[in-house]
Each structure stands twice: as structure tokens, then as C-alpha cells.
Image 1 (cartoon, rainbow, N blue to C red):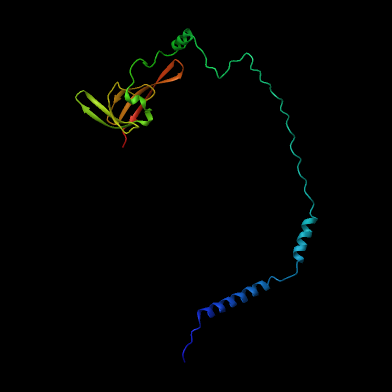
Image 2: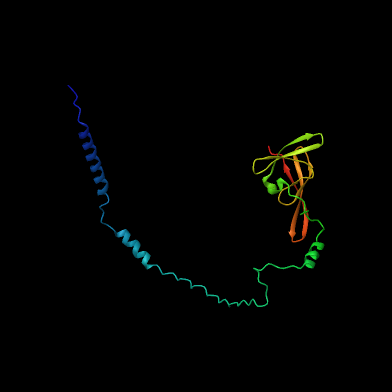
Length: 186
């Protein structure tokens, strides 16, 4: 006896009709018209006493403030100091101040945190430091050179770091020294 193959379309029709019969059987279980449990729940919820709503908090009345700028300094106009006042402020400081008359060095154009120590070079006149700046140029420096935007002066060059003394202005005419260093970048 030869087996006969059914065409593919017939197989699909069989599966579609099996699926439809299965779906109809599932849906026939949902045909219950008895809604008594739902009605009982709704009746029980409606019978519960209603809660009270808390009243809104009272509104606080803020008294208006009238600003009167008469007799006060305009904050958008710079203060004018006389030469005597400027000297008094400078005298109040520790006497430390940057030398503004000297010419600026190349590395003073870069903030100190943008500079990286990349090595040292030992020459007959001492140890020189190699610093890479933000423009990717490597500069050779020695003790006494100035670097950074805060009038930093190199005070010591070691194999693993360059020590710098910066001048920081806390208020006009008053300067203080702050030590910083550039560590050798790996």
C-alpha cells in the first residue's frame, strides 16, 4: 500500500480548524452569566462608611518687604580706591607680591594642572625638568623658572617631581604662598 501525501495547504487547513475548535472550547468556559459574587462585592463596598477628607492647611500670609536703595552703593559700579587706600591694603598684607615688571615665560600661559612632568635631564649645570604643556610641546625647565597662571616659581627639581611655589591672591593686595608639585607622569 502506497502512502499518499497530502498537499501542504490541506495540512494548514487542518491545523487552523483544530486551533479554532480549541479556542471555541476555551471561550465557552467564559459564558457564565452568574454575576452574583461581583454584585455582592459591590454592595459590600458601598455599605462601608465613607472616610473624611482632611481640610487643607491654612495659608500663611507673608508681609511684603519694600526695598529702599536710597543711600546704598550700586553693586554694579566698581569700587574706586584712592592710592592711599591701595597702599594701606598692600601694607596690611604679608609683603609678598608677584613681580609684574618681569617678562612672562612660555609656561605661564598654561594653568598648572594642565602641565605634566614627563622626565628629567641631567646636564653639567644641574638637573633640568621636562614638562609637556597643553599644546603637546615639551619644555625644558630649571630651578627659578616660572610656570602656571599663579606666578608659580620652580623651587626644586627631583627625579619624580617638580616642586613649585605659587602666589595666590586672597583679596586685592594680599598675597600668600602655596606650594604645589608636578609628579612624573607614567
